Image 1 (cartoon, rainbow, N blue to C red):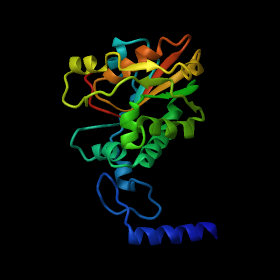
Image 2: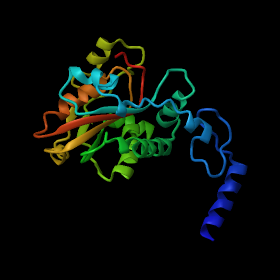
Image 3: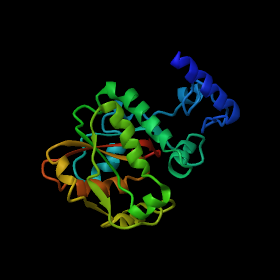
Amino acid sequence: MRKRIKYLWESAVDLLLPRTCPVCRQSLDTDERYLCRRCLATLPRTHFEDIPFNPFEQAMMAGPRIERAVSYFYYDRGGAYASILHDIKYRGMPALGRWMAARAATDMAPGGCFDGIEAIVPVPMHRHKEIDRGYNQSRVIAEGLADVLRCDVVDALVATRGHATQTRKSVQERLDNMRDLFALDTARSPLVAGRHVLLVDDVVTTGATLLACARVLSTVPGVTISAFTLASARLQS
């Protein structure tokens, strides 16, 4: 009975306020969540979890040892699937990020890429920017992973200052932009000591942000680091 009432309620809401797929912008059926079946079926998966020394892992070679680095789908600027990240990041749809991350964990975990993960550490956002946006999209994604992987989200890092957007910056400019941007949270970072943590961000384009975070996180005694992003640019291998 409750399921029937819920179905009727959602049908009425969809009629008055139609939900649309962020990729194709077509109306969603009542039983579709966030993405339509067709766009979900054609999601441009990276399958990094099945590729030894994949391009993401290669991009992280300039920093401390990373056990594994994986992304769920490819991000092409201006492509239809880029709208997923834009909706999560700029259009006030954190629930889409959490849902996509949970799907990623469900789809990718059987391959073993999350084996041994004991805590999830999101890339931090400066408090002023987070107040302005209302949430940190990386933490939302971390929470979606945690829903499936059943481990803690630990805010072990802080952003010490705001920074200019990384868009259209060269690799060196991105690295310079990241210098001294992140620090350990002295109260929370001990919670990841001696643990295998998953460092999480929304997208990897050059790896500069994740490298900067990994360098700081690696100073925690006994920590082991892997990395995950919801999306990945077409990294050069």
